[in-house]
Amino acid sequence: MRLLAPLALLLALLLGVTAAQVRRAGSKKTSAPPKPASKVAKAPEAAETNGSESARTVVCIDPGHPSEVASGRNVQNGTSEAHVDWVVATKLREALEARGYEVVLTKSAEEELVRNKDRALVANRARAALMIRLHCDASAERGFAVYYPDRKGRAKDGTVGPGPEVIEESRRAAEAVHAGLVEGLKGALNDNGVRTDYQTKVGRDQGGALTGSIFSEVPVVTIEMVVLSDAADAEFIKAEEGQRRMAEAIADGVARFIAPERVVSPRKSK
Ligand SMILES: [Zn+2]
Image: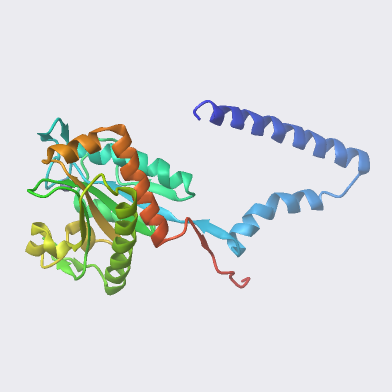
């Protein structure tokens, strides 16, 4: 894939040069007016603004650590949450892009610290159709669970959110992503169902929503992919096959929630 990009670029350049030469030669010989050429050049721009075609759906992936709350770097069963979140995030990006989605990550390197509020702002700025926050749990349970905000919460700075539309769409997204996980992870991991931010300690302490949900203006779900303190769960997600399976299951869940391309309704010309 890495070799293909430069090749394609080279080919495009060569074709571009050839086309320009042909056009120049053609206009000299036939003395055709320059009008048609300029029309052709403007076509893509016009198509974008008139927009009766489709636009790609943006999904924001948020590998959960390190944040201001926790580094996620403590080692459990031979790996760390920050590492697992990052590795699955990169595989999920590939899986979503292969399905035709546009993907935005909340950070560009595994070790990069991002505050939870800023994670939400990345998704808001990207106008994501969905934000997926990747985490691993540490508890006496085992398996996966999908969380969403079912009510507003209050952040430390006094901000209250999310809004009712985000709450409703997040519920729908959580059910869709959960269905993808159930099907894709059958027989491998325990299903702990769809849960709410309120069922987490931080969510409850903030009146019902996690910080990343409070500031979110787009549907948001948090996936506790495995319980890393459980040896069998850790073995599953440490293996590349497990990581790939997790990413594919999440991507299938995303597809149940929203299509990779959204039809932009035709706008009347100004
Ligand atoms: Zn976490």
